[in-house]
Length: 239
Image (tube, rainbow, N blue to C red):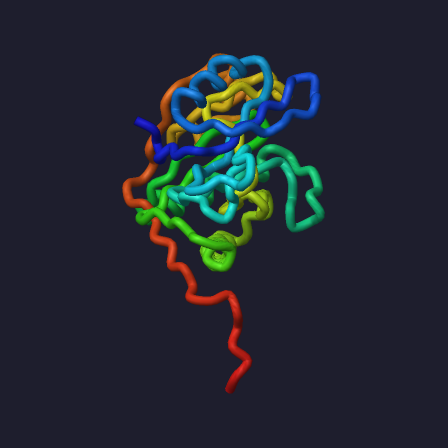
């Protein structure tokens, strides 16, 4: 059983360890995803869209319609960069401390989440209590704006999450590294983390633990979060 529903169709992408540019392709079912996974994992970097979709684009239907995602979770991506300061490089301890703060807060709220160490940072998958399926770009814009409001509240409460890439959460067209896959750039595996590993492991500990592939995931917290979707992204100018 997957930690979140894995819907289809969705898009996948491989980036070779040589840095050669890859290209997206459509997978229509779990069998096609497994075939892609088994042929690529361990040889490069494998990614997929965080969401499956309800439609593909005419006339060839080789791409998904990015306005029609099936949104079950959202993903926060913490890197060794300060995104509030033009993406300036920072030591690993900076994003790690932010992930610790967020993880501690989510545990206090009993909010369900999953954490992976990706080699250079962390991916946090946060399921929603109710799946959301926008029908058009306007609905999708309201969902994305609502997600931004939620994350802004967390940033204010926790004193800033400067290493959280603002372009990733609720990005319905972007790609995310497939959990438990190989990171060719870092020469390690993306691995699921327990609460103790998040809070107590050092960078060296995490890298040592990521030398071999891991399977599965660790559910942290119990309750999927509720996203309150705003009714409109347009601010009324009337008195």
